[in-house]
Image 1 (cartoon, rainbow over the protein chains, first blue to last red):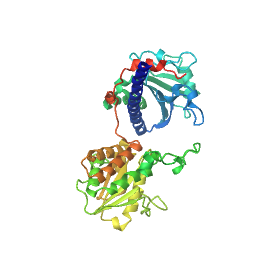
Image 2: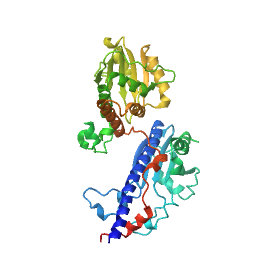
Image 3: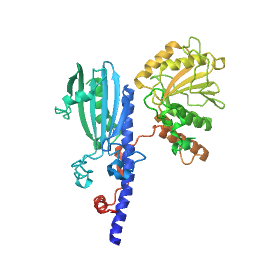
Image 4: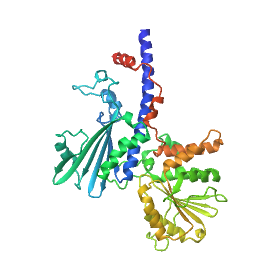
Length: 201
Length: 248
């Protein structure tokens, strides 16, 4: 019993340290998104919305959160952010997602079990972006996606679709967070692709 | 008030709903508003020794356009007088029919600082012009060297055009146009936020920095520094222990 308690004591030290490390991660993630927001705002493309991908929503105040998945307490594990803007004749939608752990796997109907994830060492933490531009005045990227998702959309090339006579362009990219370690790397590997997309390159 | 905000003690309803978003009945967080930011920063700059405030501003502002006049390094003589959101009569040919309201005016010896603050929104040269016309119509400011400071919301690629627009409309050799990023103000504050500074000054500087942090203008932290966080003791073993730990 004592040995088990000792093990648990050490494990809980790790939990406390993990939370402190998570705060440091979240701080940097927020700063990275703010950097993107500053960049896009200066281009006339403004923040639209964000959401947590692996958490449907935080349990409401009146709901017993302890009956939900424990993942619901980790809303920043996978997050998505969206910006919108009109420049000239094109409307832009920029989607950026942060995946803290590509090892996350949702298999079966139950709550995803981290013990069955790909090992942390062989997984990545990455930023994924989906860049849209369209000639539609009232864009429906969902309709365009039904065409583009049938293609090899994640190959880094520009894919096109036509919906109601309007043309949609889409490009996907993924960047390991290791390659976004400092300001220069963020400019080169993340902001430059955004700039090129907005410039029509 | 600032401490109440920083410790999340202010009710959300303390500020209005967003009048531009009829679908969202939720009140706007104070930190999305520019007026509380203006008050947080400039009220406290007014409490500092004038020379220190001037030095901070000198570090934080830049000429709006390349080659434009920069704020001189020496503070004006005398003590500054701050007025927040003064209601001015529109100047000659002014577009505003009733009143013009800069965010802050600082009368300081032979100098007048005119500060227009933005948060989320962008600076607009037409608004600057209205304010400058109103000020030019006031005899008490006619011989002052006027520095217009666009605080926040400056779009870099529009700065030269904005400068040209104002210069075209107003011919005054005693007018300087400056831009200030809130992040640069934070940096200027950090530069003078030394432990050996007088406690009362340090408290004010710490409050300004905390206010800028709260409005999102904090110094950015990059992922390259993430390793400085304390390493876990033995993460895999800990995970196994917790996986087998059940209260029922």
